[in-house]
Length: 202
Image 1 (cartoon, helix red, strand yellow):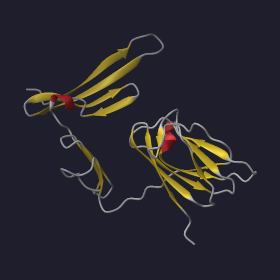
Image 2 (cartoon, helix red, strand yellow):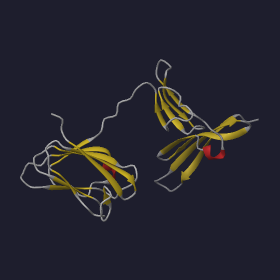
Image 3 (cartoon, helix red, strand yellow):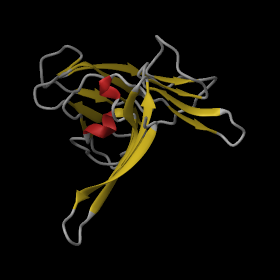
Image 4 (cartoon, rainbow, N blue to C red):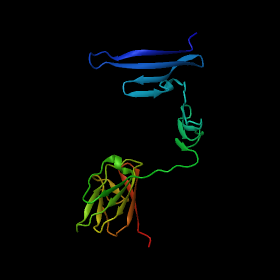
């Protein structure tokens, strides 16, 4: 009976660019399955998960408390405690703080890269005496960002192509002209943006 083994395999035998892989197997439920897999550039935990065999991943602090727990069976990740059934895919025990990136723009910026439409704050801080444009990327459901008018010159928000802002005709624009006013922008379905405006509380 084999309860565990590891294999070293050739991933690339080309002279000068050789690569190797390591496979670690363990017996679980009567079946020898891969627990870990090291390939050139990647580390996999539970690489045979699609076969129904689940290996969880747990990382502990020096005092033995849990830092990260990835539950393969639940498809959930917990920080500070094991994740629970029915909770969010990413669960944090006790508390968490997430800082949003702030990007300051002093000139027209269009179109913004798609990755900047996931939680970024844009400080539009032009004071040269001319309106500037902020161009949204193609709208993907779940994108969200905020825009604050940090300068004195108005900013115009433009969608990509004929996409829609606030259920208006496709390709319409919005303008922000009050200093320290803010837009909160959410893509609620592909190609459609919801934009709400708020002003600085004095």
